Amino acid sequence: MDIIGQFPLFYFPEYGSAWMMGITGTIHILFSHTSVGAAMLFAFLSHKAYKENRSDYYPYMKKYGMFLLIFSYVLGSITGPGIWYTATAASPRGISALIHNFVWVWATEWVFFIYEVIGVFVLVYFMNKIDKKTHLQLTYTFALASVGTLALIIGIISFMMWPGTQAYYATGSASDAFFGINTFPHMFLRVGFMIMMSGVIGLVISSAMRKENEELSNELSRKMGYVSIFGGFITLFFFVWYMGTLPDNAHAVFAFSKETIIQNRIILTLVFMSYFAIAIIKPKLIHPALASTMIAVILISGLWSGEKLRESMRKPYVAGQYIYSNQIISRDVPGKNIKSELPIIAEKGLLQVNPFVPKNLKTITEENKLEAGALLSKMACSNCHSLETTGVYRPLKDKLTGMDKDGIKAILYAMGDGAFSYMPTLKLPEHEYDAMAEYLASLKY
Image (cartoon, rainbow, N blue to C red; front, side):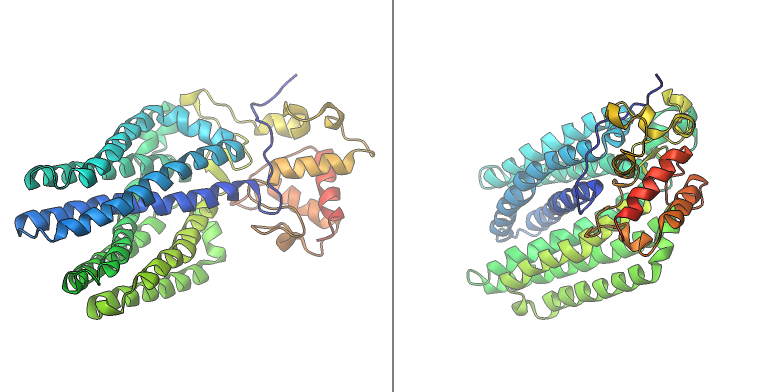
């Protein structure tokens, strides 16, 4: 019997499967982005301390380093495997595509990461035990390793939006997959945000030092304000470039909320810049409680909205513009000996070709139609949508409210004909469309 290489279905009610990965990823990104930005900041501060003979910078750097060690490298290392777990469950074929294309890139990234982990311990615990020049050289290599980690990961993440070049489909080459028009604007966009985050975290440390040394605290708070503004401008500049490198399906998604997204970004920029301006003009007003609150504000309003937008814009794909979010391969990739699964699904039906469908649901009957329709809806839709009437993220209720079975079926037919560039073009046999429509209509959206 013809089957496709699907995995067991992972379904998370109310929220949808993919958003579990998004939530875990957003938390991890706060830690990881802080680590790369902090590595660059360490190099900057160490350079200033060495060249200007500012030995009073070193206690600040040690406090920052201890915070970084726990915040980024302990908590970040915990949430990192969390991403692997949720991504493997929610999008196993997406992760498989990344591993098969970039296994050696990822191996190289781990070499850099191991150097980072060792480096942060050395920089913190040997700060007063090695000469200042050696410490400065170590901060340079630590920063290079951090930026190297970022550059390698960004190439992989950018492939999730679309491959580096069209040649990839014919060659299957990792370099053709890695280097594209999206890769470098994406990387520098992240670099800017990381620099900004390093200043935000730095303000927590510098404001907490006020009782020990108010003058130094104010000086460093001003520096962190300048660092954050510099990072913010880099972020905005490369965000504009990045948006211009997105594929058509991303712009189709973006078009629905373009004005709102731009307006929110302007408001966030004004809020952040006002905070950084206060740090420069009136550093005494920055207290640890306010500085800590701003981390939460950036996590919720900056990181979460940004990551949610990125996840949304690459739809209907999860990797390489050939694997749909629902894990179905949508095009041939001769360079990887990959064949599109759409023809066989259109001919046989999704229930017949998925090896993990229970035997009693392989053939749709009047008795099992609702159950089969529920399973089909989960297999086809739940990686992007929550199906329940109480769904939280991308609920289908927002799209299907008030529709009867015939109206829902018409949408399914349109989707199969490719009417929506941001939705999978997935043709199914008539009886599977009918079962899906009947199930979705029974939910009474």
